[in-house]
Image (cartoon, rainbow, N blue to C red; front, side):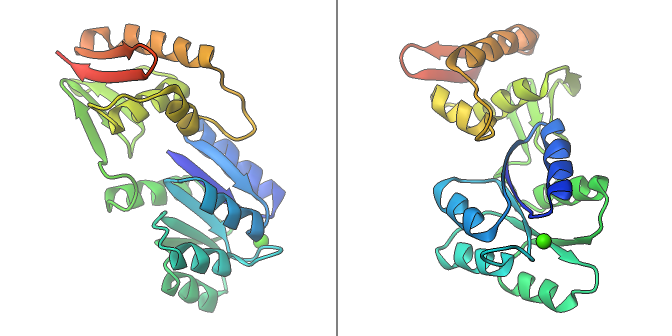
Length: 221
Ligand code: CA
């Protein structure tokens, strides 16, 4: 999933970025409200984690503007433990869930999985292609119910292909889903991930076809 983290506390932001990157998500981050507002206009995210107390534009305003222009990105707000009122305002403004600080990263992951289960993240929590299935909540790929060992990046590529099954996915779309804005993933790297995925998926019956000049297509026997 592509997640935007908006947090002005650098220590907390770093912890969030590290933890969610390890879980295989593609992360962008913003440290003030204006920047977050721009990023939410320019890119599509599967989830935004939004601190309410932010410099330049507060989180509540960022959220109101997002919902005001019809943006449906699920938003999980971060609030201070005693700030009951801002929590209520946040939910009223269209937040999908909240966490009070300080929180455990394990709890954050659990909330994200809950949002996925409630159908607020992604359109299909479980995707399948023949014997191959992808559990977006648990972030793993399975063949006949057995987990397939894949790296975080390989999982990211497979998730994009599974989400757009039956359609050709081009390299830009894969890069978009995979990249942090500050990390460079080249054409070659994507070819390497596809090559590895093909090998690892061989026994599942799922095939990644190269459509020359256009991209890749996931299908099954
Ligand atoms: Ca803050």
